[in-house]
Image (tube, rainbow, N blue to C red):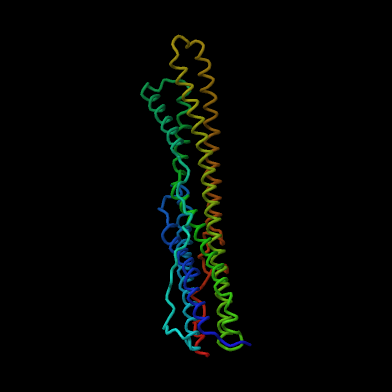
Length: 341
């Protein structure tokens, strides 16, 4: 076996303290600062079922990425201690964090605009007010009003903060990619370690055992970030689907309100229009019943979906005790490789 090259080991230690450490640290910063959401960001109704579990998962991943950051820096410092123990020519007490400039993140928070939907709902509210001010005489509107109000209420309680959710989802993806980049960079920086520090002694065996555990935790960190990201996406999709369906009901009732209002305002045509309005009123009465049932079904399906996602062990329940998919960098053995030299 070759001889140990302490200066080369020290150079590798400094590289580990650079990009690999910096990427994990940025992942932690992202989870801690870009992923938190306001309590009602998922919408009034959905937030009651997912906000608490989401924040639990986010807090857990914040701690995990913080511990991963510390473990990566400790890896670099442990290698620095080895280099010093072997008599590195460079006088160094410890390897400090060296944070290079990383490529910018791709975190984006534009989200989907709900301005058009809000305008439509506003128009419907205006027509309902107009109907009320005319003495509630428009035939058919009396049957349509509960449907319209119910649809608007249902839409309002599932309406999320699209921009905030979009940014948070983008942030989870960024944190996952940064953790993956840390793994890739670490493999590249350590590629010359076998030549610099041959694996023929007790200290190197201790390092190899520790590194196996570290690699396993880093993989679990990446998988956990992916799990939360996927669950987050599923939750937002479920909310968006319900929101769009309920908005469709709002659009339908708005179209009928406009039609009935226009018919009422046509002068001299009441003899022709009256039977049409009466038929519309009967149809709307039946439609109201069907719509109430439909909205109830949408809400039920949404709650069921959200409950399933909130209890997903690979996503928002990643923080639950006993979950084998959890990263636990804090359980890594104490680094004391240099003591065996």
